[in-house]
View (cartoon, rainbow, N blue to C red):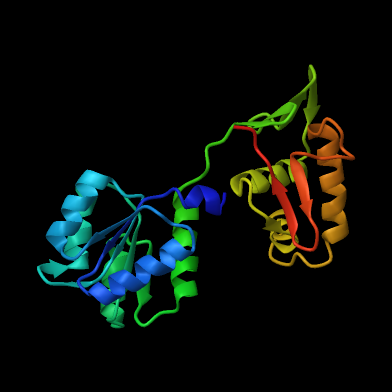
Length: 233
């Protein structure tokens, strides 16, 4: 699922520090997020959420007309949007208060840009799953709900590993997915040593989805980096 899909999500950022808003916006946009709504108070954040209907809210605890906890309670009256608190306060009571209200995560300032991104992606992945049942490729259609490839009047079943591999590539539509990332998707947290097995799965998938497996046009090898999947629009 991945970043191409998650980058379509709308993010609401509420903080009264202009420099922090600018910095966080730059971090998110540099990584591919384009739809970012900014607010500087409880009132502005509530109004923005009602109008824009964000997919994730990142809230500061200390706001000029209240706090992030009260803003979260207001948001919860009309939306179940996932929420991350982003605050300079490192008090255990504040963290417990935020999480106790149902926040999805809590980040303390100062923070590293990569930490913010990892936490944003983690929350989005937990809360949103790509709903793609049919995948149209050049010369075939993949039915994820049935784990089948339909090509030239034939129905070719996918194994569990083939299904996972194709789904992972589809979630990163048109983007390179590293060998390590694909191995991790197939074999878990210790993916080392599986590259030959991955190559074998790729060969078998190409036999099912490509018109000419020796000249693939859908599942492409990017030498030294990984693979990408070209999807027909």
